[in-house]
Length: 364
Image (tube, rainbow, N blue to C red; front, side, top):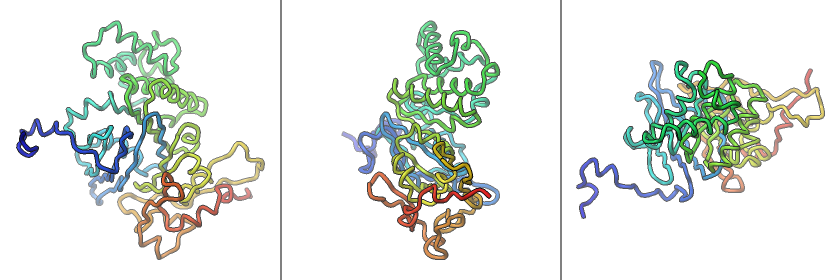
């Protein structure tokens, strides 16, 4: 038998790499040491810095953070949709198989069929000159070109009905401009689940929708997961959204993970000041007092061209010890009690003593 180094290039591509020891056997999607940089006239933009996580079957993982924290770039890197000028390093594994180094024609077989994505802006993601039903049908025929036309039409109607669009037969013949914002978002979800993928990445699926429509979209995603048992990566800036649907939460800031844990751990035992600040800014329906002012995190998110040294959050942090170590040493993610709960803060024990409601003040 020939050694791998003696195989022709085409056959060498088919050699299955060994699963790294730190990639769980039962993980559907694994990301390891992902870094993404973009060149610009002003310097290098460090969009994602050393991100690692796992997603398991029938699990919802929420990724939260402000705009510019690297959430969407992480998802685009997983899908292999970043522009060529982007410098990407690290590894992405689908069911233990490395996919980050695959050729475009190979990863195209996975994209949409095994790993699908709901894009952020449903209005621009849908082609305005094609009927919605035809666009969903195209997502199916790309991976199953031999499908019978009658079966295809029935499948499109079934998908529209599944995501809660009324009169699905009639709506399949309409154009995107004839849909409301919430219906367009649901149509995008129908398109993404057309091939029943193992992993569904939803990038800000509730942005620009009113609260009632947000609830309907999230209900649709829960219904889909119950039916397909797919894993969902939910990207959002709204902590309230992940509270109701996610199993685990990844909090990102300036391209880095700052805290990872279960929903209960993140919401009731936050150990990073950024997580604490986000929770303190959330209104609570069970708040008895009406004269309480929500917490505001001071300052602005940093430019990814010039990420602050040490902990990137230290210029905005009320727990920071400057100059050492917060402004000089980058904190590593370390376990907080349970191994599933990690935080990147030099003084996480101090942060844990404070509750989000303690940050709120009386309104003047």
